[in-house]
Image 1: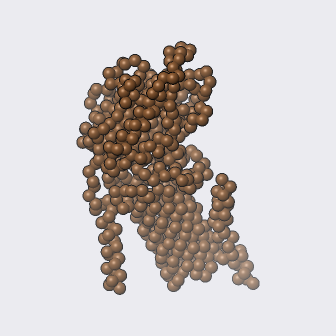
Image 2: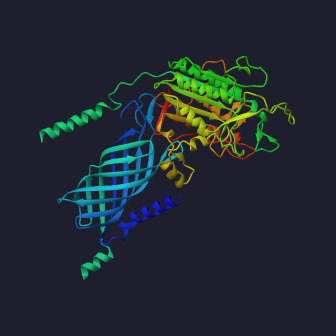
Image 3: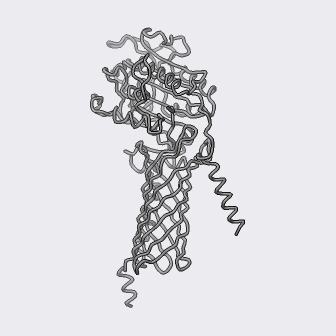
Length: 189
Length: 330
C-alpha cells in the first residue's frame, strides 16, 4: 500500500511538470482512429485479434523553439473484435493521464512520444488498469501565429494484465499557443 | 528503396494473413458440464451461532432445468455434448428419480465434486467448453471460511442430529472461491463457472485482472500487480451476486431469481417443453456471456426480488476477462 502511494505521487509530479514550464503555454486537442491488435498473454487460437480504436486527447503544456512538452488526458473507445473460435474481444472505454513530448526536426516534420496510465472499463461493470506508450511522426502546419494543425501517424503499445495491444493509426491535432506572462516579460527584458 | 517497399508489403501481408478476417474458423468443440443442485443446507449453521439460514427451496429445480436447457440448446444449435457429464442433485427424500443416492459417486459431496472436476479435466481438450453450474448456499461471516465459499454435504453424517424444527444437521464441506478457480483452471479448453449462491461474486474478485467498477482505484492497481494467473487462461464466470450481496429465490418463479432469468436468456419456457428464441440473443445471432449478463442484470436486480433480510438488491457479476465468450450460435 505505501509503495502504491509513492508511485502515484511520483506520477502526479511528473504529469504536472509541463504546467510549470517557462516556455510558451500551449493547449491542444487531438482525435484519431487506429487499428487495435490485441495479443493475449495466454494460448489463443489466433495470434492476435483486431478491433478499431477511436481516440481523443486533450493536452496542456509549454513549447519552446522546436520542442513541446504536455500533460495529456486521453480518452479511447476500443470496439469488440469479430468472433473467432467462440471468442471476441470485449469493447471498452479508457480514460487516462499522461505525458507527451514532441520535437520538430524539420520545418514541418517532427516526432512525438508519450506515455499514459489509464483507467479502463468494460460495459459489464468491470474495470482495469493499463499503461500505454505512443510514438510516431507528425507533420505540422501553422494556420495563424497562434494556431497549428498537425497530422500524426501514431504507433502505440497498450500494456494490460491479460492483453498487450499494438495500435497503428492516423490522427490530427490542433494546438493553440498562448503568450504567457513569463515569456512576455523575458522578451521585454 | 525497392527492397524496403517489398519488406513493408511482406510484413503487411503476413500481418493480415494471421488475423481473423482471413483465417478459417475452427469447428466448435464439445460441451462438458457439471451441474450441481444442493438443497441440504437448509440446516446450514449461520455465523457459528444458534441460527439457521432459510431453507433453499428451488436449488434442485434450478439444477434440473439448467441440465435440461444445456442439453436442448446444444442440440438445437448443433453443438455436441461431450461423452462425460455429471449432474449432482440433492434433496431430502427422493422426489426426483434422477437424484443421486447417498452412496452414488454423483451424490453432491465435496469429495465427489472434486472427483467430477478431475474427470472433466481428463475428458476435456483444448476445443471443449466446460460449464460448471452450482445452485446452493454461499457463505459470509463464518469463522475461517472465505466469503462466497460453496457448501456441500460431507460423505459421512458425523454431525447428524436434531436441532430446533429441523430434523437433521449434517456436516458440510466448503469450497472456497480460490480453490474452485484452481481446480477449474486445470481443465483444458474454455471454462465457464456459473454460480447461483450468495456472495458468489467473491470469485470474480479473486480472478486478478479486473475489479468491479464500484471499487476504488487502489483495488484496480492491486489487481494489475497481483500474482493471480487465473485471468491469463480461458476462464469465464457469471455469478448471481457480487461479493457483498445475496442471491434470492422467488416462490412465483419456482427458481432462484438469477437462474430463472439465466434460463429465460437461454430460451427456456418450462421443463419438458421446447425452447423458445433465447431472450439473450444478440444482434449477431449469438448467445454470449455478455448478452446473458446484460439480460440478467436489470431483471434480477428489480426491487420485487430485494433481499428483505439484508435490504440489498441482487447484483449479477461477471469477470473482466478481455474476451466475450460465445456460448451458442443460432
